[in-house]
Image 1 (spheres, rainbow, N blue to C red):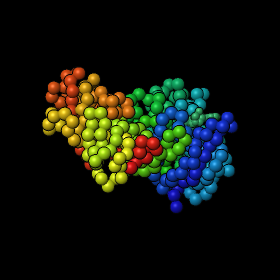
Image 2: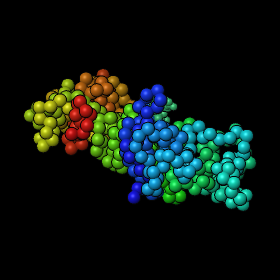
Image 3: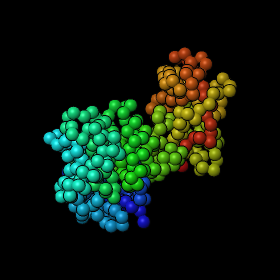
Image 4: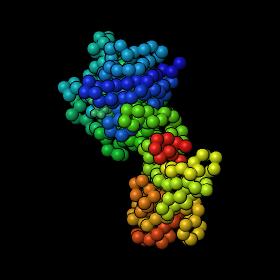
Length: 362
Ligand SMILES: Nc1ncnc2c1ncn2[C@@H]1O[C@H](COP(=O)(O)OP(=O)(O)O)[C@@H](O)[C@H]1O
Ligand SMILES: [Mg+2]
């Protein structure tokens, strides 16, 4: 039995906005589930319905086999951490962490013990007497997590807890939160719009777009076999190149692009979208134009990142107007002056095909 399950969950706000449209997925005990998608796709609404802060207008929300749709938030045995942390400014760190236990009227010894344990776990013991305004963003974040931990909930619900932190701190906290979650063995539903957080933290990822679930799977599934062109584009940085073209005689053809595609995929004679990740190009062995399994385009930008370099080519075949090629090393491509025509080979077994109309994987 899954520990947390959403079955065709819907939310229509009273102004008729359909924020969540039939979302289903489930988590086993102790799994880390990331809900990811662009701003406004329904992530927070979904999380708030699980927390009981919004009423679902359709479907079932199950926790440990029990339908919780009609339970009050306090009776659902979940703990939520918000993006802005929602700490009480007039209370100390210790009092903030203790808050859920205090309102439950737990014994003072229990409260002291649990606060101490949580503070140790989060390395904030020295901060217990401070007020929130005397803390850095990262420290506030820990206090908010501490407050969730002491409740010992069945499920953690985190809504973009790292989005207010700077990049370096975010990367550190990412690893810390994941480690903490595994150590506590608590089921986690974690909302983010950041594809790096989704890929690195999730045991499974649910990708939302416009209130619909595009795909639910492991990071490996989502990355290697994206179910839709939306998922293909959303996860991975730089994003997958999406090229619009036509298949004839087993060859996908678009402006400056010729790629052989397997005859078994049933794409002969069709307009399709071909997806190629920036890292799935190789150096072309021949400089002859119009060759099979190559792409070409005029170089408009070189981005040396250190370990890798991104080459941005102008291409009318690409939906974005650009093809990004990512290579190991510091500007490793010869004759890569801006404005020159560059040609790269495509590893045909790495090409993803999508239906032009539905965006679905073929
Ligand atoms: N309280 C509300 N009343 C009406 N519409 C809302 C409310 N909260 C969110 N929405 C709408 O629902 C959609 C999803 O919002 P939200 O779940 O906050 O998205 P996300 O967290 O993915 O950015 C958006 O179009 C948003 O404008
Ligand atoms: Mg949100």
